[in-house]
Image (cartoon, rainbow, N blue to C red; front, top):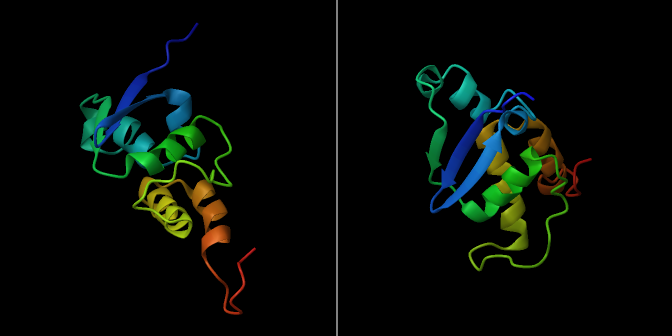
Length: 121
């Protein structure tokens, strides 16, 4: 059995564990570059990352990279600082930040209105 590399991503005060197969989903992305690519940390063998992003939104990133469907977002346990619309917009911003192109495209279809004022397809 091949040993998978283990990575720890701490988002504010919450830690998430990732393995190779997870960071390579929807790659290249921020995680593959940081841990296995062109970032200095990769060259130094770093396997820990600390981010000052929203840990609530990151749970969807973690689930997505674990192979789960994350859309539509659940309507329960929404933090008070986010509306339903802002969750989608901020998750889209995070998808852009992390370079998760497939997730970003799925979110764009839910967030960005077309010129006619209706949702894009």
